[in-house]
Amino acid sequence: MICRNCGHENDVDAVFCERCGARLEQPYGRRQPPQKTGMSSSTKLLIVVVVILVAVLGIAAGALMQMNQETTTANTPVSVSESSEQVTYKADWHQVTSFSGTGDDYRTFSIKGERFKIVMSATPTLNYNTNYMNLDIMGSSGTIGSGNLNWGPTDSLTTKEKTVEVTGNPGTYASDVTTKDLESWTVTVYDYY
Image (cartoon, rainbow, N blue to C red; front, side, top):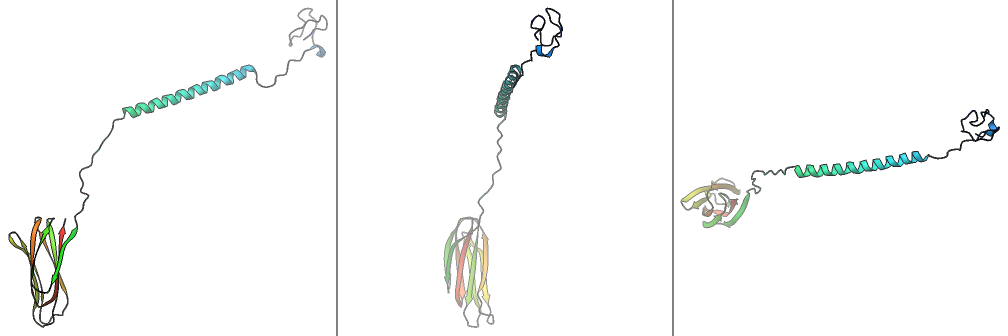
């Protein structure tokens, strides 16, 4: 604020002149304070400091999380568990051999498993007599199983079937077929392994 009396430049908010003491209330003598546009340099400095601080804190937090994850992974003991043995192969019936005829027959066959079965089937001839098929299963100690199919003089001429199942050790066995008046017969051997 410039004094009109002595021309001394006073502070903007002064009411009296510092040199001559005259009252400084006339409006034309006041110098207008400069208009501020934008942010002050101190505000700009404060924003820059805050941004830098946030960036440093973010980097530090990321590094701490990475170190914590590596420490957790390094200190976690390895766990190993083992299941008990399980059999994944399931035994099933496998055809070993099959043979047919009209009269008596003797055949040998080999078995891998500890069980086998023989399916016998036959059809009689039309003669109004007793017709039959006998099957003896032979092992190293003699006959171990048998089966038979019978038709009486008045029975119909239908095909009959019978299964004989044997439990034994793997090895060689024989089938002994005895017949009377049959049109045809079939023997099929199955091994269970």
